[in-house]
Length: 493
Image 1 (tube, rainbow, N blue to C red):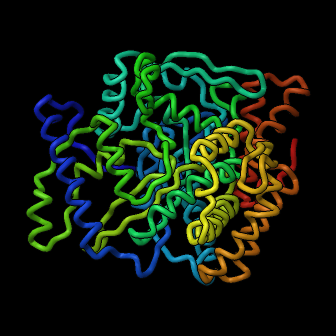
Image 2: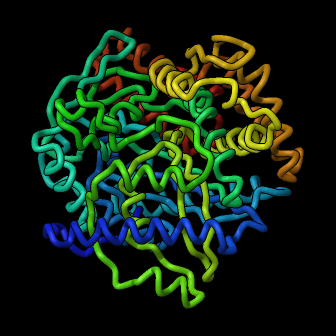
Image 3: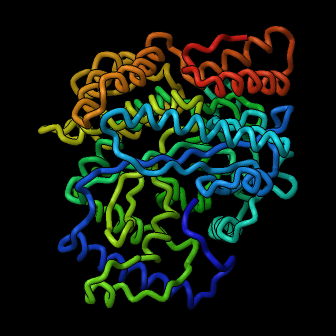
């Protein structure tokens, strides 16, 4: 959910002091990278899943406070909008049968959460953008009761100095063009975040590999084709989040000022590169000050919290974000992969994560890494092409040229995923269960986005209007989701 803040507004003096403390924190972090002992002997993985709440008609249900009270589980937290909640999955290792155990645990937890939601008239849907959310749902009290969200909303709008402008052209020929006076459109974007703890010296290789992998990830996992009733990108969430959280006016964009939602602009050599860029290029949004003197803590042999640096880092929305954290008084760093949408099902989610962790390992340890043979711009173009076209995207890969995403995965990346998971110590049963889902998507040409588009088209061909077609599609989607079958096997209406 992010670091809590206590104030919704800040003084000029606070902002100046905060900038100084962020820079001090950056210096301390640099010293720690050079001299401190970071936790990495047992690399851990983690996962966060953002969820949507709907009523019995599959329309957004603005009652997350009531739902969380009913669920009574600290693993479930609020998110930006009142029809969102977040499920935080406990960190664990990858080896052995851990993937199957995780699948069972996730299903049991979500089934219980769904049962308790139903008692208060709500239901859980795991999807990249809730297709039944419409502009009128944000006319009233849509934001969760949390000071951080109000402060963030006010800070983004103050930085822009004007309303947020959304302009998205869909490959279908449909277009979204409208203004928003709050961060409400951003709240429609629900994702899965995958975490991997790594040795600091190996962070750059893993981050670079994750950037290369972002395009294939999105092509396989796209699940957000509709927003405000329009069919836009296969993963509309990427462009919607980019525009909805943009702190730049048109003039600042024209000057080349970097966006707050940031793919990046270069390959890196250290995790420090990313934190330094965040401090150098991005002004503070939430300048909340702590009492810690990080220099004194480090000199005394302690582990600094670096609260200001971490809070600032959390307001720069990289699709692969660097994380500094502390557990049991031991610092560690990890790559947070924010590329994927939520859903369609638990088995689809774990298939996406197995593919990511397997390929990432192989790319990161390659003697001649793939990012040394392709430009950073090519990686970003792959990312955007996959967001626009989903499983039908064509992607560039060194030595192969521009090829269909499905061909790239089947012929090259899927074998890497199998080998990478083998090196992680993952049992063959687990590898086969999850990676067979990725193979099935490629062979059928079906992922969450394409299934949604085809289902809505079928309803519309029978004379159903778009709004009702979206509602009926979501009802079918939800039933399939709760059965935990992979999306490429779902029947169309």
